[in-house]
Image (cartoon, rainbow over the protein chains, first blue to last red):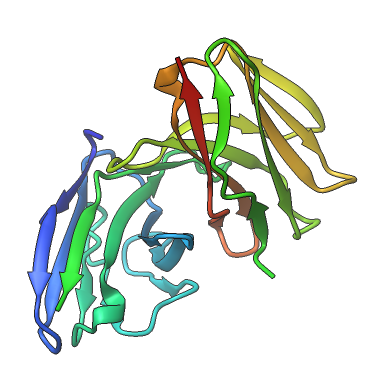
Length: 113
Length: 111
């Protein structure tokens, strides 16, 4: 998964705490995505960014915020953590601008107590 | 109704057999489709993409696309225990510039 780096890999939060999941890429791709994966639910899109300075909501954006101030970084912020946000979070880049092929980071496993 | 539907499985096949994984989609405008493999605790990795009707072969893998019937399938020939994983089907929603994933089918290949 060299090219897309997610930190931290594991995190435990208490309800109401805030935190930021970091995603950094060194492949100079425009499009970046945040997905969450829950058992039986597949991968669901939280937010995506088509390029530096732009962001758009996906399927499940509530409780999250993002920014894209550089091409390399696409942080995901949890504003006030809830147990329903316990999940595995994947950041991805779109490697081919003409198709939808995504390349994923290793994931961040978040537990909210 | 989810836009991309998959049977969650598990699909159990013996080593050396053909594993057949299926996926249906609802967006008639979808143009490209992908199969990702995800080992337990790991991130999804792309194994096949298909853009036009018919079959596409890559080694032991064959992807099949039927746009009229809105289904995509993945055949794995000579299945190996190392193929045991969850297989995610995805279609590219060009309008929203995003991939829509199915829930995945868990494949178990027994020695």
